[in-house]
Image (cartoon, rainbow, N blue to C red; front, side):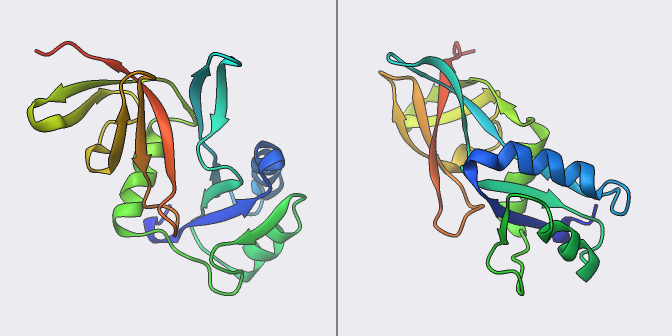
Length: 172
């Protein structure tokens, strides 16, 4: 898959998984290189207990070998399709730092568990295992009481922030 042709797609949140699965099935014959991704994170609250929540609600990421009018036409016909970001006529390619971030997300899989982190002198933090590995510069807040880290993503235009759970790792 050509890295410069990874794009961001916006679908309705309640149908995100259904759209991803339907798109994969509908396009596999004519566009076998097309891949679709959505990401879930594990969270915990006293009221709900453990549960999975979308990392980017409403978003499905996709990559395809060649962006063509036929691909867009087929994609638009899938139930739950909303639009391609920024707009359908000028799709937004994910490049640079955002592309590297997306590659880390894809490498870590679609279901994210809890990261292991080390707190270093000067309040730096280093993720040594889990979905945060490689995202050191993106951590914007730490809630030690809830064991949550707030991460800012470069994948969305507004720099979406999301919380992820972490465990302390012993200092080596």
